Image (tube, rainbow, N blue to C red; front, side):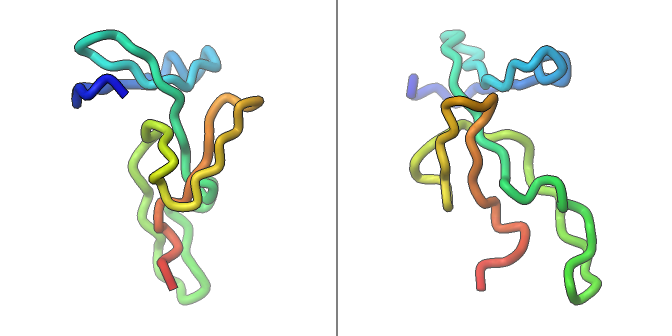
Amino acid sequence: MCNHESFSGPTPAMIEDGDWRAVCNDCFTTFRVALCDYRKTHGQPNAYGQRLPFASGPVISSNSLPFFQPRPDEDFDTYYCGCRGWD
């Protein structure tokens, strides 16, 4: 990590080009990003009819993310954002 807190991306244009990296706005270092493994079901009702919240966008990959799984052969890593609860 570069210790800056000013990150952006990936932008929709970057994603369309297959680029899922986050960029530090201060030093322009790039990082891999992680997406929730359940992102395809965000915003859909659960078994109790409650709408699940849409999680935040991509986050910078880190071993400290819950259920983090590095996927070096894919465009992004995965983790669990808590969208289905923690029970």
